[in-house]
Image (cartoon, rainbow, N blue to C red; front, top):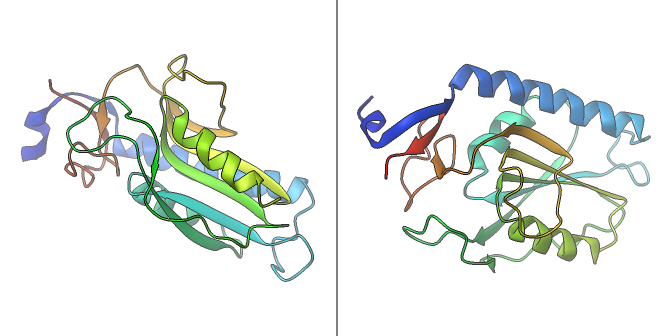
Length: 188
């Protein structure tokens, strides 16, 4: 593939991602059921499950993850920017779209592509909690342990990775490489 010339290494192959996404989907559903959520009837009191996907980086991950969750759920999208253009370091959180305003008493799963500085998750968690959801869980495909400058954690993590700038499987550099099916380190 011509894209591979731009990468110094492939960190996580496509098959490993697929296997881990399968496992995450089943872990999330199991945990929701164990916490008493009626996943078969979203109209039952406090049984509404809402996925909030952070766009655009999480688009591929969310698409694959929800197919591993055979339950009734709602999907909402929120656009947030923290790596504008050719930046390889977070420049802070900028909300591009508003959060849905009907999250009270819902079981919310916030899904993002990567936990890096922690700023995006922290900002979104705070805004979601203001609406008093029945529960709030977070899921990220990738986490850079020790990188977060603030105390924020993800309930579900696909993979821990080194502190490298990565692309593929939805993650981009200046809008490119989202379509690469694996996680790769961009050549400097």
